[in-house]
Length: 426
Image (cartoon, rainbow, N blue to C red; front, side):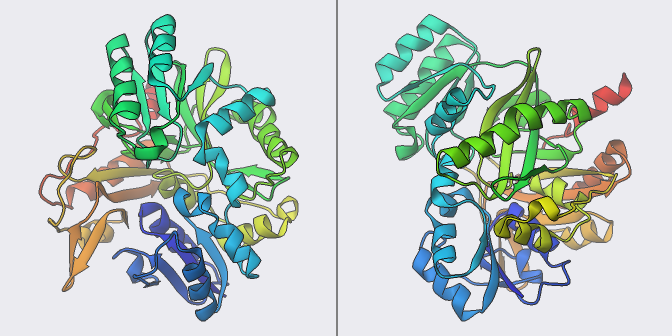
């Protein structure tokens, strides 16, 4: 069948790369795609990923049998609804179900209603009321823009001054636009984070290999949050015992809750969790594959991704076996100078072929091309991924790949997977 992937980042490049391995994949298309995806698929520009009518027409014109919606924006804009109405199979939640990511207040209220463990919180639409609550609660404390903010709408304030400034930034200065017209203020949770991505058909839910993202821009988890500076899988914190607890207390209950709310959830559900001294608690739910977690989870998937996605759409996941390799994968994100604030664009990237010949997989996140050359075109530019039998070897290989690539202002973290490596020393 012909397959269309919507999106232009490293997550979508990874999805294309994995889908291309399926015997069921004929022609692959990407909207708008990127130079890395162009090696595997026909990239189509000029169609907005939020124009559902144009997307449906494109899928019909290309005789597409499966659409995979990568980013959160088209999901919350009802892309899957539009494809389904047109009789085209689409992987991802419908608009009503995607609200679990589109509105943090909806997600938190759902968890409260169905007793799913998460941080204590309050929702505010007035800045002064939010500030009064923060003064009463003290710091550290977490402030989140309610709507979509490209993974950057969360501020972990370690002092009262930072927390109050965050309210001014989100609600006063509109740093995240309409996404910040409502904020969620929640308690700071201490512990180790783990990301559990899942396949679900709305009733059966099958977790993927547990992974761990690195949100802070600098080594030792310092600096502002980003969209993610790297990831690795499997994350040792995700023990079989912990995953069983997560399945029982978080994953199964939330899928049942969504069905009871009339929002049957199909696709990939991302559960971001904090492993606290009181057990795992939900930090956030996302309505799609995580980025950069996808870049380390899918290389470990041994099953045919097309088969799994179709089972999610058709409601037959309970009869589908999903197999994983026993190895490890590590992703190092190479970012543009200035990221996560204002960043450089248009710098030539060299060494991509050398990194791939050395055994790394290089997934394009923010790149452009001209006359056969590749240039930077985003904050997160590349995800350099390596797979090995163990975490240490995968880390070493990934950094060896990074060392072969260069562009002006490039920066990356040097301690990806440090939580896992520290565990290995004990």
